[in-house]
Length: 266
Image 1 (cartoon, helix red, strand yellow):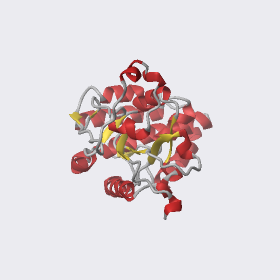
Image 2 (spheres, one colour):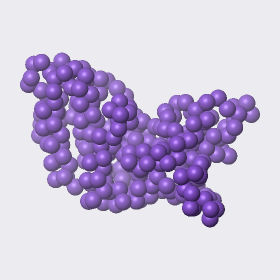
Image 3 (cartoon, one colour):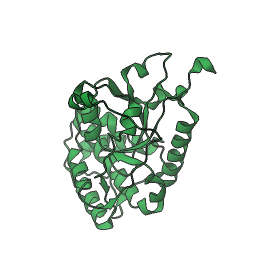
Image 4 (cartoon, one colour):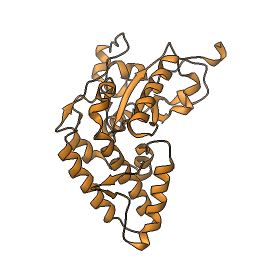
């Protein structure tokens, strides 16, 4: 997908020393069938470089509908309420309590805002240093944001689908993983064989709409217990997450426990 800003490719760069890195990054992004994975960028940097952008997103713009739990409720004993840090909640409990849901998150779809942000990030591309490591990494990060801002121009065409899912942010995830340190965020492929039909259908629908939006496949992750990522005969109950094609934010697709498949039962 060729991204342009004011009729000019966002990957154009006049500095000859840096042109090789731009070309490498451009070819990689254009050739990949997937959206850029911003989580791997965050992990590589050892933190979240996007908190400022998330704060801006939370102040203005149209509201986003939050998804509902899949049924049931979770009761927390009175003693546990006083000792929250000592509770080890299951992923399903986290989902049903909506602990990840960021109700204040707003996706700004105003055309003037998008145009201004695209220009700002184009300026940032031109200010990057030309050392291979920082330069290439910076290109990938900024290009990931530019791709998602470009996608946002078409948000109104797809909003009915994407508003079915609640948003969570990197900040919310990091906070949860700090207090619930028995949980882990991992690639969906590690648990895909055990995923129930309901989860697969959610993934297929999200992939279909994202493909129609930008001709890229979405990135999926799961939030589960540390033991869920090891070989186990116990039923897992992960939360299925998708990286939004419109921002460096996550959407919550669902959580399952009883519906999870035990392969030995097939």
